[in-house]
Length: 123
Image (cartoon, rainbow, N blue to C red; front, side, top):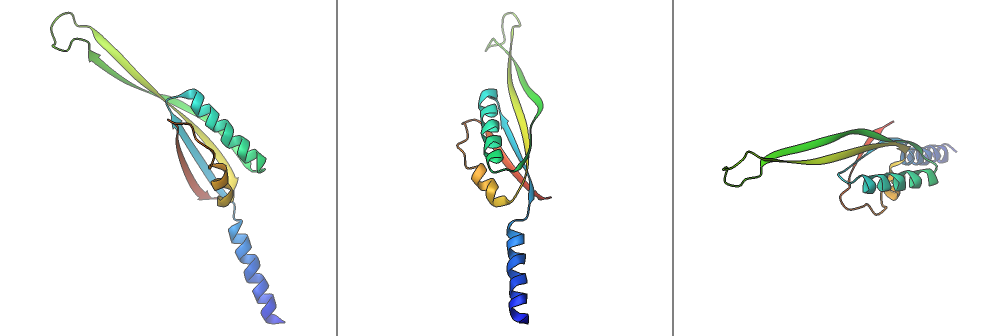
């Protein structure tokens, strides 16, 4: 009678470890806002279909990278300058879920130019 009870405890303990809830942070970066917002919406829709806790998308400040160069290739003539800039947009999404379901959610096709970084921490 004692052996089956110990076996049952081990089995339930293993199932509890599999279903351990993790705090998962998904960081999305892109220079294209439309593509970034579309990926965010798809991720959140997938998470809500699985009935997970979702926080976000948190819009972080846009980084503006600028380069100022001379128009003239030889250096002669009027000092005229070109100013180029690239804007990098960033979004954060927090999920509270088992790690298996995150693999299913992030398996959506991601727009080109959108970089996804997934960080897992115990809740």
